[in-house]
Amino acid sequence: MQDEDLANMMRALGHPVRLNILRIVAQSQQSCCCADVTQCLPLAQSTVSQHIKVLLEAGLIERRSQGTKNCYVVVAQKMQKLENAFGNLTQGLIS
Amino acid sequence: MQDEDLANMMRALGHPVRLNILRIVAQSQQSCCCADVTQCLPLAQSTVSQHIKVLLEAGLIERRSQGTKNCYVVVAQKMQKLENAFGNLTQGLIS
DNA sequence: ATCATTCATCGTTAATTACCGATATAAGCT
DNA sequence: AGCTTATATCGGTAATTAACGATGAATGAT
Image (spheres, rainbow over the protein chains, first blue to last red):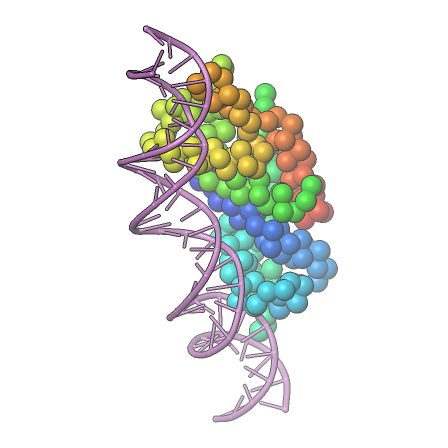
């Protein structure tokens, strides 16, 4: 994975609200839309939407339009790749 | 590990220059000072110093004053903890 | 066709970040 | 004591980010 990419994903994870959003999306059993996420957070809908955008652009979540709602899911494959890349980085650093 | 902490470390890793600095510090066989790092990068010394500060504050590197120089080392234990925390996060997300 | 709902985007503001050159401090050397 | 070296910090600028309320576009319901 490219450094630029790696840094971008890390940056996306580098805000507590976004960590929270990821967990909320992951834990919601059925589809999870922006309103659902917003309801769990003390933030305006537009703010949540922007955080979602950051996660989308990092490729960590995916949008699925579903009627009038937009639902989000964690992209497991991307997370896995990131974990691997991170493991490689760490190994390189502390070996 | 606290979310705030985790996010802070992630943020520190969320810039390609800082990833680079970490690698430079890790790979330098003997002590690695600010000037050494600066020499490897197309940035001003003051800029490198600031990036180093971010990594220091995240606890990912440590300063060891050595004569007139300040040398840096990667804090292996912290990196390991971060890797673990990250693994936990990922597991929680994609399980 | 109208209305309601959902949510991305816009416009704004305040705060933070990234970068630089310049300066000050601290340690070692002569 | 004075000089050199290394580097943290200061002051400044431009860019980015985080937050908000308001608006507009799209979809589904009446």
